[in-house]
Length: 429
Image 1 (cartoon, rainbow, N blue to C red):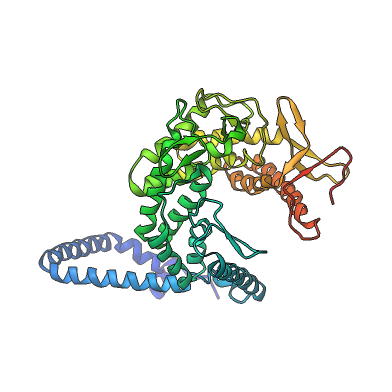
Image 2: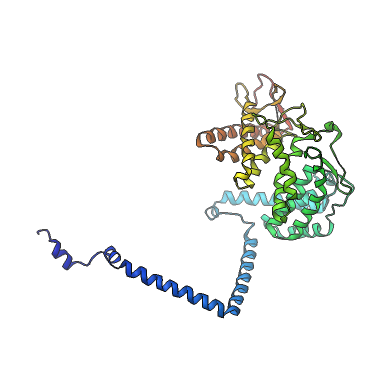
């Protein structure tokens, strides 16, 4: 058969859909515009005439939102993504974690209710944080997230009736901030129960006088009843780096939720002052003079007394949505990570990476188990680097995590020691 001509094709075949669109696009646009204008005008007229109906619909919407929230509360304990629903191993692991929490919490309720800690071997209770219910307050968010509603409500009732901060007790500003203020704010964010916010504000107001120093660097201890602040004797009157500069997250969050800037101003002043004198390697000694604002000659460590300062630099940048206003946090953190890399050494021949401690120009081949926060911190902060540097940071994080894993794995009990020394030639298995 011969090829059809263009004229015969146009007369015998319907035009394609696109042809109709291009031919009639202008009329369609005009009709759509007129229809939309009519609908908007009609909606405006109706909204003015039918306020009662709109009000009723808004009330019904609020009821539906509450019902949805109740449903979310019932299922929040599952905390699963749909594709994992049929994975028996994931289900088994989740149930094991929740069972462990229920076991620990049940024992705490039975033997140490409202006290700071339960001593598991003797089943005795101890008030190591001044009787502020540290375990209870610190567990509120976990109970809520796991859907342990009855346990959460009992804990909430204790907070309402028994949590009293008017105590003649010398409290650690740092420990009270991270455990009590942090726990209460987390519970408030999850439950929207203002009781927790009011309690957080109460204890924060009692801690604030600790920042009333000539330099703005806070004292580490304060009497909750009388507001007298000081530093521990064993620190020689100096403030401890991790204690004095690891309250940003909680106090900034408190200012955001109360709309009161005083909490944020106190904690951010410290960091801004540090930023002015921050060393190129980003490593600060663990002792600071709260009167002069100077650094005292003391060791540098990512373990005890130094650790959380570096962690909070990164997390305050994240908390601030990585904006220009918090750029200095990221800059300080990246400088500190350069310093961290200068402290990395590896065992021979097993090549386990570890973080040394430093005093002056001398390194000590010792790493605290507390420094095992560093792999997670590095992984969290890696996304702020360019791809090449991010890969290096993640690789170092993996190396350090492997070392930390072996801190636990190499002991008979699978519990790590407080710190590990790496003398020359030692092989860590």
